[in-house]
Amino acid sequence: MLTVLGFEVTPIGGNGEPDGKAEACLGFNEEGKNKSYSLTYDAKSTAKNRIAAATAHLSGLRRHREVHKADFSLEVAIDYQGAGDDLSAISIEAKNEKVTMMTAKDLIKLLLLITPKQIGLDKLRELFETCYAPQDVHQWIENVEKMEVEKPPYYELIDIIYDLQKSDSEAPVINIVRYQLKAKMGRDYSTTQVKEWLVLLSNLVPGSVTIDGVYVGVQASAQIIKERVHKAISDIPIGIQPLYDEIFR
Image 1: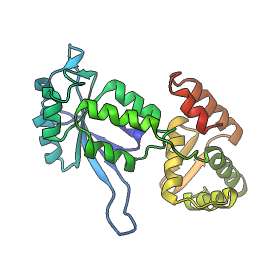
Image 2: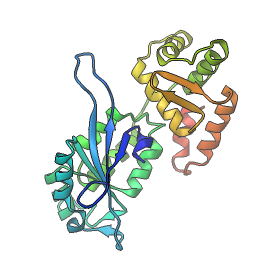
Image 3: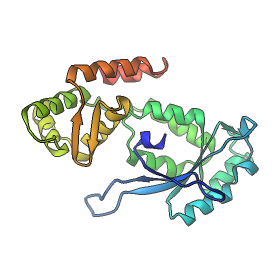
Image 4: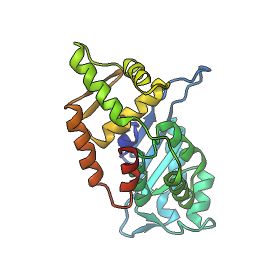
């Protein structure tokens, strides 16, 4: 599921090892500072629905982070004992070891919010830097759901890429798409912003919008892809659908 969030994932596994390592490759900012980060991740399962602090092995997760030279740690489980209590053992240990503890339900909700709330890897860094206890993670996701965001020009991007493919013998590149979008919409957009929108689109309709480095493409006509977007929205849980309808109107 971390690949859907935009991470490059390397499975590890094995005795005494994390399930894997996920990297957010964000490049450098204008000051030349590296914006990329990484995290080790583990998914816990148990016969009980709620995992206790002892079962979570948070000190071990901290060691995973240190051994694999990651910036953050993430653990996902069905639920945690004391998840709603800031003074519970799981909450206190999560903060002490700086491990982000997320319930499966919250992870699913986060995945559904990625597109309508335009949550890129840069924004997700805030989650891993500031939220450790399950209740803090839950509240961060709830706050994201309430965020007001600019309506992205998703359909315009689809039209531009499709038109470029029809009129040029080479695959469109993101910089050209950005330039065309600027001309069409009468406002400026950053390359990073355009790429994030395209990644979100490709996650919503996999196989219809593709990204390969600086190259982008659509694998059907613009109209067909828009129909696939509507179909994808209809498959989303009812409570989240209005958020998608708002940005794809």
